[in-house]
Image (cartoon, rainbow, N blue to C red; front, side, top):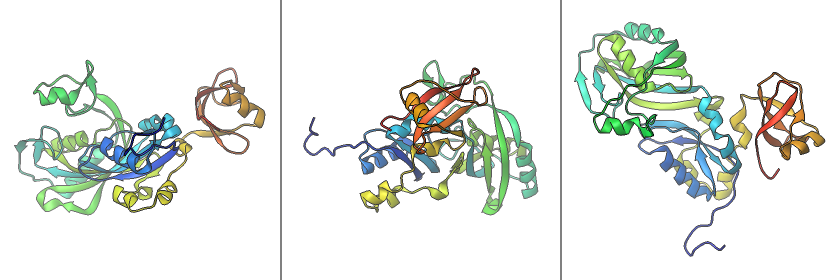
Length: 306
């Protein structure tokens, strides 16, 4: 079928682009803008960033979209700006101010408060979130003035440290860096830190700097992409298996690789239940498999057209 007049034809494209999302746009807006630049048939992202947040947003094209969910479970890294003394209904700078209180905390008090949140903790998701209750996002209830009960979720703060010399502490603003597990809400963390200090707080700014082994230093902004030629943009794409660096690797011989591509299990000795990224004898990526208890490598998700 020929494309309609004036409509830019899409193309099949496989790979991962590390985008440095700018302030004030949704993750979907950023995705669609980049998709148009690449003229990609199929595209998706690996977990949203709020419009308030900037930073790393991996975008997947074609076969890479099969593996986009892998990063949802990965640890994240953020740099966050906290405003003490002001609480809002969304726990961030976009919300309506609920209360203002004087700030008497010192930098030493802040450092002690941050240390108290390192490790596993139970965190109650905010009402202004995309989590669903009875098929409806919580933020829709919040906008209607309805607060529903939310179960606390176990998260882990691996590292939380104050970035000295950043922020404006004289006016109650400081900046911290956090390395946390999936499901952590940094604006809830900011609000909880404010509660611990006795003055309240909200998240003033947020930048995601890492997901798993991927870092924002290797990411490109939309203006940077727009300034490149099509060939130069294509050269920035990472292969689909770049999303799977946390998985162990298995390399198969020609016969087993052929069987696996047809969806057949192959003999393999490994840890029961482990997931592996699998390659053929020429180190071409085949997909993800799971090791069974009886010594078989079971295909889970395979790329097409290898």
